Image 1 (cartoon, each protein chain N blue to C red):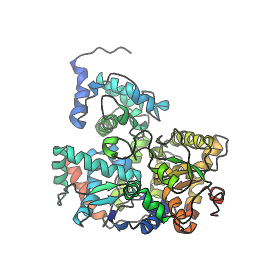
Image 2: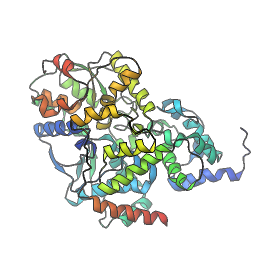
Image 3: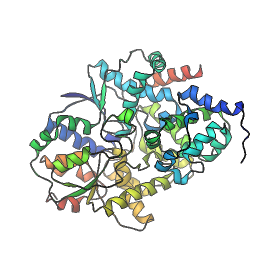
Length: 185
Length: 289
């Protein structure tokens, strides 16, 4: 693919910088991030390629690659980057921005999981593991996925059938409502 | 010493034995734990993927409760919680704009006075000598590898603990207990747990790599310090054995379970019966089962 480079291309990098404070233009493609990344083997666009794609403003290609969502947030890239770029923060910024982008995402279930996770936390103040697993399994149309794991966990009391509500749930709901208000502007 | 205790969601469900064993060890060492009042989920790996402000606000909500109740030290045994709490403190310290936004969200103005600890940090601060004093039964004959997981030491700016690529804290405790800590190169590799429900294929591969390396290193068990690593390596071990057509039968023990056993606790007191892969053989080596 050839990219004609102009000032226009810089917009994405600047947008990321204003959102996250991270300057991706510092990246000089040493590939330390990719070499240490545990999920790079299954990424179409590796972490160092993602950095270059942001420098070149290739918003749509980034979304199509699914890399944003395959990142496991293990912080290895951040730790090893010689330019001290917080790559996970860049990815998180992009994930946040992608809510308002209408590009194709090949990994739709991962952001769906985060949404369900936060919805359950908002409801109960804590995570409800069984509910989370059931909800995402239904969403992925694989209702019985990992069912073999459920019995050993249930029988040892490591998985609760019913959710448990935290006494702090109400305060948490207020906080989340305020954040939504602030973020809307 | 008195600490605010943040068990987090995992320690009341899949990581229940971490809770049992940590409390047992704390009693023995004189660590006084007071559960954070009305605590809520830290947001783990989902909050920061949806909203940065939210990912800071959830830890702050809990930290404010601790600060308000007069605590200046908080222990979070789950690495996901610990990492989110430490990140919130560090970011608030260095980013006045974020501080302002957070103050807008809360009525109580969090001052950033609560220092966050993982149990390992507290143990090492007390000193190996203190641990040695409490030992009633040396774990001689047991060979383990210590698996630290992603974020105990990463990124160093946030974690501010131990050697980032080759941590030693658990190894030193294991040696103090009399067991052998084998050196291996997978100490801080990621097990992939944040994708456990959505991309299990990644999780199975990464966890298989860890189990295989541990077996090849000659370990009888893997010792961990995070409920998510444990749930993954223990809970998915049968699936991994089936897919990769192999047999590991490696028990995944919490460091606090081994400490408790060495301090003379009964296996039940430290939740040994809660483990899915039976540690009978490994603990049999040291005459405990």
